[in-house]
Each structure stands twice: as structure tokens, then as C-alpha cells.
Image (cartoon, rainbow, N blue to C red; front, side, top):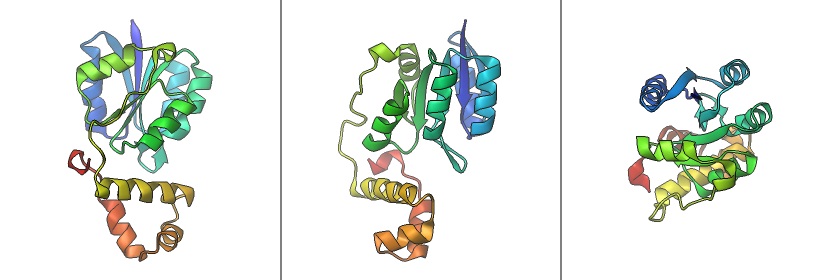
Length: 178
């Protein structure tokens, strides 16, 4: 039986993914932060990992390398509500086998989990170009990441007021921002 570790901070989504994948033959275990994820990976020894890119205040990208070192044969899929080509490339470079934008259908998820690293080929993330709002949001995220989460430094670098930046950061991109 395939063993699936779901590392997702959205409890409802983690539960839903667990139920969906259990129906397809996976023995599932879920956790909600990076520390739990690494601990359970050592104990549970999953064959597959679903990893959320944004775990509360943590970045799931930072978990890819330690998980890959601990479980070299694991099939790892990064899930994100913040899809961008830059993060997709970074995730694959760090060792993820696939990268999927939320929301994701069961068949797409099963396909992503069934591939191996040798089969991996980056496919286009979207069929249509990203909107200007989405591109702005992605740029803000990159600058914020480069400034290690410092909102004031990011606002100065972007030439905007700190409060304006904070308002923009509170708005999560949705599917209609594509």
C-alpha cells in the first residue's frame, strides 16, 4: 500500500485530501506545519508527500530538500494557491516531482502522485497569461521573500507606503486573477 503524508495548514483541505486519497488506496497521515512534517516523515516513512507551499508563517519550499534527503525515493508534489513559474522552477530544482495549483482535482492529483522523478516534465502551469494584478502580487511576494518577510524594507524597495503593501498582502490571489 502507498503511504501518503499530507503537510497542509488548512485543516479542512488536509482532511478532504486525506479522504479523497484514502478512497484511492493511499494510507494517509496529515500534519499542519513544517516541524510536524519532518517528524512524521521520519516516523511514517511515506512513499508520497503532498506539501503545501505556504504553511502558516513558513515556506513549504524550505521543506523540500530536507524531505528529499530523508526520503530519496518519495514522490513529492507541491500544492499552492500562489502559483507562479518562478516558484514552480524553484520547487522542481529543490527536488519536488510535481507542482500543482490549488484547487486541484482528484484525477490531476492522482496523476501527479503516480509519476516518478524520471518521468517529470514541467508542463505549462496556465493556459492563459497571468493578469496584471496576479503578476503584481507575484512580484511583491518575490521582493518580500528577498527581504526575509520585512514589510517595511519591501515597501521601501517597491516605492509604496507600508500600509498599502500590507493591504495588498492581505489579498490572496484567486483563480480569477489569472
